[in-house]
Image (cartoon, rainbow, N blue to C red; front, side):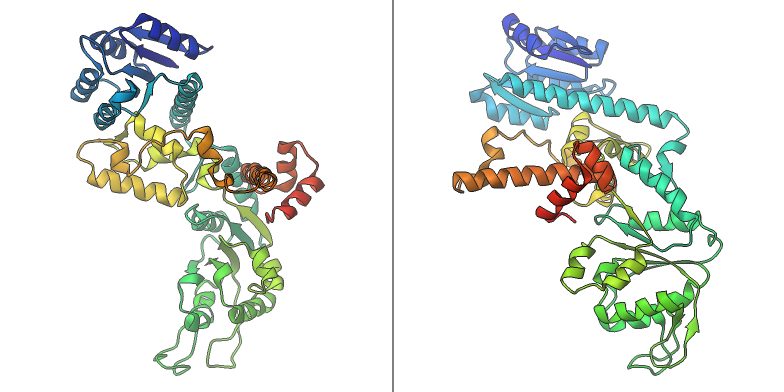
Length: 449
């Protein structure tokens, strides 16, 4: 980890260097813009704290020179300015700086910036190492991941594919549930037969039965010909029912009969047709809560849940973000350092699908071949103050605020542990250092399914 401190005042450089000095870090110094550029060319620092107001070549000069010279690997640059120079600092961000801090700065703030940058450097190093290998350890078909949850998932896919049991895939939208289903099919004994995928949430409720089980000509208005339905199309192979949690309850009853008896009855006929399909279903819904709410049949739930696989959200496997981003990037493009920081800070509500769409759109519309945060529609998030973190509790009575804060904290810690352990409660309890029964009781109190 190389950190360059650029300031014309020696005491300022000394103070910052003392605050940032740590094992595994090389602290470099420069007293003006020309010397800073020489240090960047020679040592390629990972992080630069750049003072804006210097008597000879100032911080803006350094930024503009870096923009001109495309042969220089641009580091992450934090500009340092006096309180009255905030607008100038914003202009610097437009010229390639990542963020700015104002003097007098908080020592813990610059240390947190350095820790964040250090994490990015380690992740990039790990990705370079992984990409230098044959990639077999980080790939499972079209799935990609080096994090512990993904490696666990890859092992589970290999074991599950060999069985004949139905599989229920759980995970947020955009995590790649259909990719898992396809990989299970490819690795199964049915790989030479059809794989049929249907999104049950995307079918009009009045047509779900026809889509699943087929119909005969004249069964209803508009049925001008016979239709097989996806069960018969997948006969001998695999049927993937996506968003199973959104299936109407009336259709759930008929689906249960198919799973129990292995027969389908097309709409408009009494004929029963035997089918042999392996069912893989997926949902982002809380099926356990849906059962309590009488929106999902419990007996169907246990029929579908032969084996349960959990896909971790992208935010819980940060080491995979850059790995995926580099894999998605077209060959001619690269990410600016400030873009790497912005990607790592983003919360990814849309998961891998959001990352794919973001990078593909940026590559299509970018003027150059280096994607910056503005191209991605992202900006590095400024760190919140201690006051900001507790804003939501300020209007509550003290006792209630304290109880709510503890509850929110426990919920987040438990959810993160469950994500990290692929929703294995025993493993999550070991990670948290508590008994399994204690974790189950706490999950029940916090309504975590």
